[in-house]
Length: 271
Image (cartoon, rainbow, N blue to C red; front, side):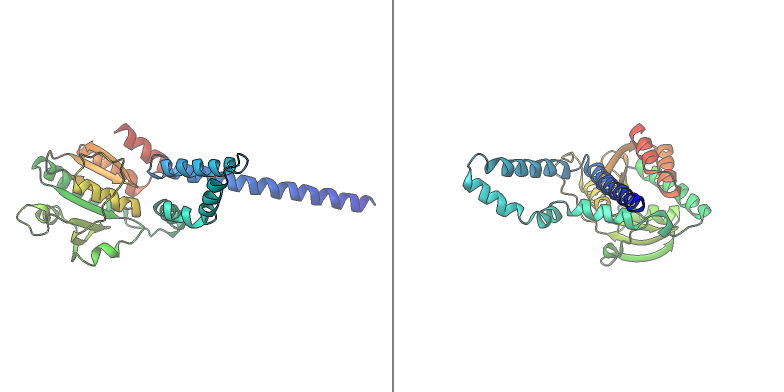
């Protein structure tokens, strides 16, 4: 009898632990999901979806038969609705899960140091001359789709070559340059535009293209404004404007050579 009682106690404890673990995992996933959509256009969408659910829960007790029927049919396909509404955020979240540090390829730190220095000097020179530029730094997510309709170079990165691509006499100056490691992979790339309605209406096509690509990948994008020579850095749909050479160099070191997401975000907020 004592053995049976002990077994029942152990089974009860196991059930409680399993329930606590279940709640903790769901709470953590919900928390990370809310953090991921905070400050994006998905936040008001989530609020609107919550209002619809609340209306559905109130419609039946209040005797609103037609409204209850309409919302019931709408919410019966809630999984499909969520996937359609939050497709960009879901894609970004799954990309983060699949691209943990253990899966990332290692690169020579000395080569990346040289790449960052060449980029900083070239971008600073472009900014002083008020020459517009759009430079994509590929990270873990492949960007072969934007290479298909571009001019493939596969050349070693150098300041002179990069600068010559963006001068107004160059036929490739309007497109983006894709850099992978220490090589210029392609030039004249066409990037997807961001259609976020909350963006500053004064942003030009280059900035919207940089934001559009950053919303779909983990790439880091450098933008030089043709109007005023301002340098901007774009990552994960976030735009940091009016950087100088030192700030750009420091940000690239943090983003490419290491540093946690919180440290990077904090450094960008300070800039």
